[in-house]
Length: 529
Image (tube, rainbow, N blue to C red; front, side):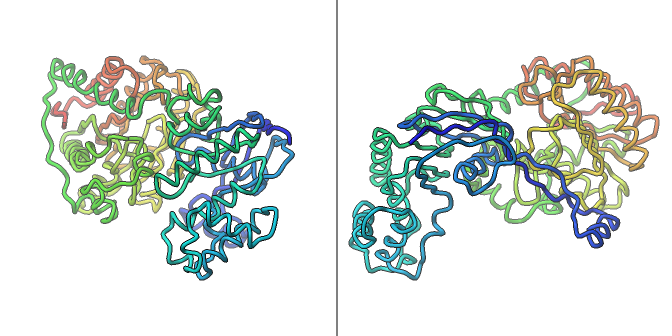
């Protein structure tokens, strides 16, 4: 047996884009091909693993962990790079499909023994698997009558008994109750000491540090950490969960003090109603938000481990944006610093965004006949995928100028997208954004703009991935609001996310509000909170 060597492995897929107009539908009909873009599931991943060691694959959902395991197992052919390994592999990816509910436990044990190529007679192997799984007393029961945890013991224990040199396990490292889990982990430790290699995907960083020798943390298909498991940062971040979001919240007190000193008045907005939110979001999602009934995976997608304390504020966020939009129609400018949930979809939240307040406000105003052509100009460093999805039918035109790669990995095409290379500084960034804004306004001819002017493109922001100076962001915002004023387009200003030091982001946000107010001297200088 040799070690495992992975060199520059990439895996690309084609992702179909939405067909938003009649022309794209006709092209699909006559060509037989749908418009698509390349999606990088893995991007230049490399590592080595010695016999007798374990590697933990960590990272958020969609980071590439399962794709990498499939490539190691030979299920998915890499688009590039090389995987070198000589030995027997046991792969536990979706292994529940091995089992047949109508067969007995004993028959399923024999099936697992054959599937994992256990040496010896299948009948003897089946007895051994049942014994190790603690299911001998249920040998004649139909597998479908057992709980999921008990059923999965069979293929899991068969894989551990297979004599494999390399074990590949996705997510479920140990199944069953706590006692059975301890036995599984003990058995895995024995296999490691005997020279077997283990590669497993997990969200449990404590388990990764306890069992693995090394860790590989993936984000957007790229390795962001490779080294000792004991020194591994939290998957997807180099700081404790929720730190960036809480830092973003800390800026508001500083910002509000600055605004009051400048003569702005803060006014609390009424929460949106359920009827308002139902214009965009599914009843089931809203019911679960109210009940704080989210799965760990959903909380991870939101990137808010303490999100249960924040969800009740979703109705207030939607109400604040709606109030600011009404003020914009009345006086040319409305301001709500906490708005901008552009990652939220109708049936779920993502990336700090439980609900999409801009979509809610736009649909409410459309339903009332207050606007006919609302539009969204999204200048966040991350593409507004939720807003683009909600308005993919074209009722509201959407513009997004963002970093070309990274979060969110799965994007939805906006009416107009401007992809800005990672690390772009003032010159390239401002040229692309200014041209995009002008072209979009010429196309959309809106009668109200929701302007999401975040500060996460700032050069010191840990999540933005761009390198724009504070002066560059001030120029961006001054250009936008002067352009809107020249066209007599009301603006609802939202400040969204910002994750650098609170004092810095508060100053950037303050200058954004000041630029908007300067371009609209008729505004009432009321800030919704």
